[in-house]
Image 1: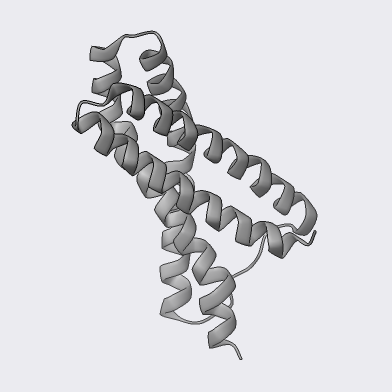
Image 2: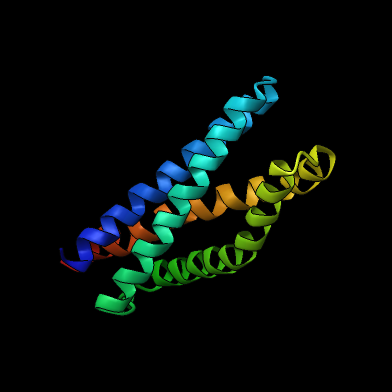
Length: 143
């Protein structure tokens, strides 16, 4: 399996995680606590699979440099920076939020989830955007 295949898999995992996070929030807003728990747990395991796949891809092929395309490269680097910083913040938030929910500490879970949800959704969404720019936009513009 080539590292590029893992990059495509990573994008699919990020998109799937975002979909499950969103669906989990929809479920809890509808009062469907068990559905919410299953969807968020699924989002967590998809995100964990993404992390393993991403680290494997990075170990196989290293980092990829976005070509010098003027303002598009600047936009890419800004997007990548936001994605990376939020991803660093996201992991402990997700772990804490899930832990509180599993311990039935719902008031505390709800307080932290208000921060965790938008950050997790943003990390997943920007991850797909970073992939699209690096593997689709940049190659199309440098042909």
